[in-house]
Image (tube, rainbow over all chains, first blue to last red; front, side, top):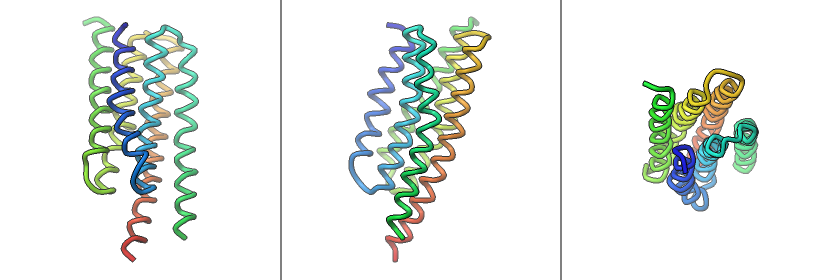
Length: 85
Length: 97
């Protein structure tokens, strides 16, 4: 196991864990904030796994997530705005 | 100082920022304070880790791709954070009425 895989494991437990904890309960805005952070950390974990396994083509997953995750968050904010009107 | 050492130093700082942001999200009280945990992760943590990976990969197309992903994460995360903040403000105003 190299430093990249070790860091990926650390972030998967230490950063995505708290995001899940907050994302599964509370107000919708709070859950959205946790989802936003979880998406960023997941993209980083995917990058680290690609480097750790020495498969550079796997970085495409992180690239896709970096593009699609903010779009998803923006869609959710539109839904929440619609609910409050 | 070798390239790998610089990459590991950048990785350490980036990972610490991401972990700190995650714990801040859980520990900070109130919706407005929690928003402060989002931007450091997107604007500092993720680009630093992408930079660490690019430094370790060395000059070339792979490193450029990693840097582009880092920039995308920084820009996309910041825009999403602003949108979440706007929704939070609106929800808090609605709750006060």
